[in-house]
Amino acid sequence: MREDVLAAIYDAPLAAQPWVALAPALRALTNANSILIEFTPVGQCGGGVMVADAEWDSGAAQRLYRDVYRFRDPVGYERMIAGRIYGFEDLITRDALRRSDYYERFCKPLNIEHAFFCYLGRHDGVDAWLKGARDMARGRFGEGEVRLISDLLPHLDRAVRTYLWREKQRVETRLYAQTVAALGVGAVLLDGQGRIAGSNGEADLILSEGHAISRVANRLRLAGGKQLHYAQALETVATDPACPVQIMTAEDDGGQRVSLVIRRIEDMTGIAASPVAAFVVYLHRDAPGSFSRMVAFVVENLGLTQAEARVAVMLAEGLALDEIAQRLGVTLTSVRTYGKRALAKTGTSRQVDLVRLVLSGLARLA
Image 1 (cartoon, one colour):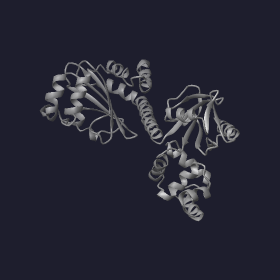
Image 2 (tube, rainbow, N blue to C red; image 1 turned 180 degrees about the vertical axis):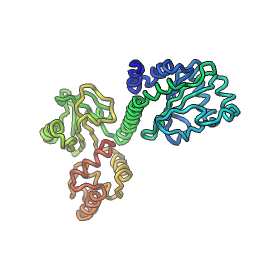
Image 3 (cartoon, rainbow, N blue to C red; image 1 turned 60 degrees about the horizontal axis):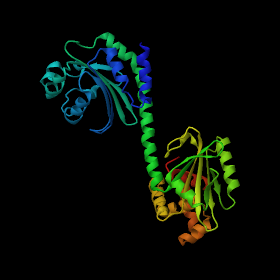
Image 4 (cartoon, rainbow, N blue to C red; image 1 turned 120 degrees about the vertical axis):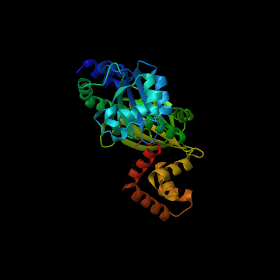
């Protein structure tokens, strides 16, 4: 097995342009006129990723196939089993192929007379394919070429899984960032010594106001006697694997509260990573409209009623039960009832666990 092709396979999902360098390597290995690597989201006619290397203008051919001939292609791909290699003759008779509009108007102009197809499998809702084509002069793919491709399949499978996992993380990170922005959540990156290594726009705005929490000498400074509590929370997150998240609130003399979620960087989302970052601190403050957005988010994502969600969000903001009762205009008994229901519905047994779940869920960080 050629080491350069194996190296190209394992480099493919990590490259700046994934799969682009692998396609010509596979084409040379199989003596093909064209190689196509395709990723198609399940249930979508358009979209997906197609990477090709061919003797013709592969970009124009891809667009033509995707927009027109995908819907006229008579080849029975649905009969394919993942990890097996097929030719035209395994999926359609030669006569039926040549009588088709797909052959006459797409294959024939590109000199596609022979092909191999391999369904690489479905991962995270995406189907992965490898396809190759030859003209009449080069003939069918023989046993030797099929064996070469078969030997590469376990390596391709690993590379495909890596690529789709990274793509899923990239998409989720973008969605997290949008959620964080919509909910007015700031994100601050800290290095191993607690120094600020980066921050998003919302965090910069919160810190610039300098009330409940501020930036002093490139570190976070909390008001209301909470600085020691913050240092202890940061130390706990750094040293105790059983406590990857710490939650607390800071409050200034005017009553402004900022909630903090402190966690290790491993699962950090919503802000571009820094090579020196060790922790991320998420900040959320009271702001016009933010409470109703948070309640709506908790209702949708945790399955609580409006009343239960209000109590859960207020607990996450650091309010005591009697303060919540006063703000909502209900009895303390009602607040306790809503709190107990929220615990039961979320599968938590303690108030601190509910708060952790709510604050983590608000930024989709759990």
